[in-house]
Length: 389
Image 1 (spheres, rainbow, N blue to C red):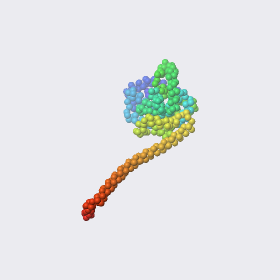
Image 2: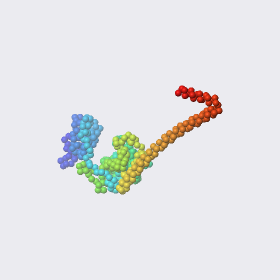
Image 3: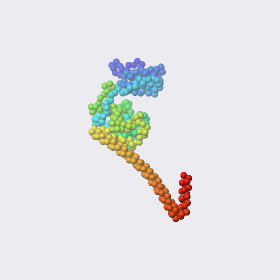
Image 4: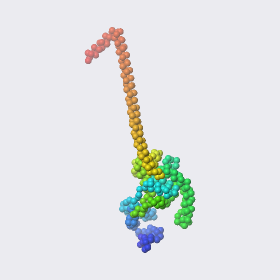
């Protein structure tokens, strides 16, 4: 724009007052915003490491411009989004318990608490960094986190492992001391007007920025000789986001894929009934498999625990099957008992009728023996009946 080169002759970045240039651009009513934005998008596609990165930057720039009065046609935005469809350029490495364990040894209590919280909860980094102290329920077993700053703006809950809980409690013992120290270390930058003053009264569990967390994690990887960069993008291949992948894959391999997706906030994978799962049931299911998310145990113990858990699950299913069969048999027994009672009632009625008939026969026999006239009358009646037949 304005024929200003991005780089000077010595290859360094051009030094301009971008605030002034931005105001001049917005004030120029002759500019074709759609044409300018299309050129900008084409530059991003050529310069960014991946289409995903280009699309993210384009979206950010568009929102800034729109917030300041620039107008774009819906067709322009849709076409550019369609052209920039694509995945991330960085090829991630698989996050494993071994990698996490090695990096944990290079972190302080703050870093260990944060990493274990991410790995055992399946939450996104921004969800954990915006988590308030009041949103952690230490009375719950397992400890429950209430996440409000979520991607879909819907509050959800998740849990952290016993291992993570112990580390978080250790961090809370030192958190106030950290806030005071951070405020002192920041005083020089505040006086220079470079940044704002740190909040010593913050109610956040982890009063850190995204960039600080990424730096903390990358430094731990480097200290553990595990840091590696993608050759194309130059980015860290063990990203913070990989903790979510670790969480989902570990629970899925332990037979709890639906639970993993539920706690991670992937509601699109779930049917309506599971989205209404109660916290108690989810907590019990989480406790049964939390060993696969526990970093500080030997791998063979984790595998053995998973094997035992699978056997217990099979046994539990067998017991449930026997219980269901028993309930069915009990139901049939109740029906049979009811049927038997009906038969007994019918037999009782028949016996009563037989007794009545025997009584009547005895009376007739007595009459016929003792009263000749009655005998004659009965014989005549029998003859009349035979005649009619």
